[in-house]
Length: 287
Image 1 (cartoon, rainbow, N blue to C red):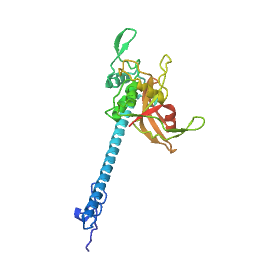
Image 2: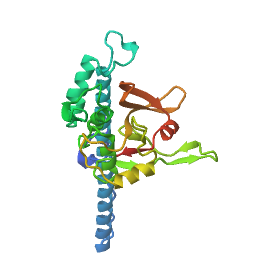
Image 3: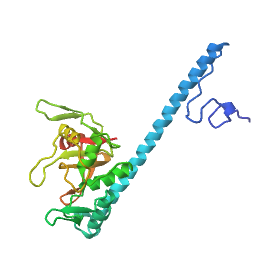
Image 4: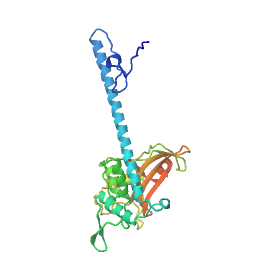
């Protein structure tokens, strides 16, 4: 018994009009017998080529984003391993002064952002960086952000890469949260689409009680005044963390895993809803 195979993408090119590069059928030729037909056919081919090019570019960007998120997740996991108590993993994160943690902070996190010494005001001389004396949260965020995008310029100061973004000198751009509030000022809806790689920034006060920028407008204004970029000098006080993962719980609620450092003298990893993020932080740096 003989079988006749219909046209399929697996037959010879002559037996099918399917475009194998995109999976889309080639447009039919219009035969009008004059130059108008040639013009129409050329326009159709040009439009189809533009559509295919846009689709290819969209697919490439999707793959690039997946690779960036995978790289970020791997580095975030590695950082967590650095602070895990191997003898009792359920006991919480190891402190910054532990032997392994101290080496990791001083010789990797600080070293990666070129932060190796600090000016000692009392002794009037430089001293080596110290994981228990010097803030390392910005260096931790920089480590993760660089894993997400190798072109990110990290720093031992949150203020430096926040200012860079506001001044247009970063692969990240600043973004004010898009929220709706009720009459009491409470956030009831968040339209911002948070995603892995977002750097979340917020204000704080220094040890003397002097506040840094506290809201998005103040951070934007602070960036206009500039900063000399020297990590051994004080910029404005601030803090930032980075989103490393998106989790949808059994309750159907989307939560975002946020990772940072130097809070409680150790690593921090917490999950928040979009509403909680918009309440806790002043804004974000995003790509």
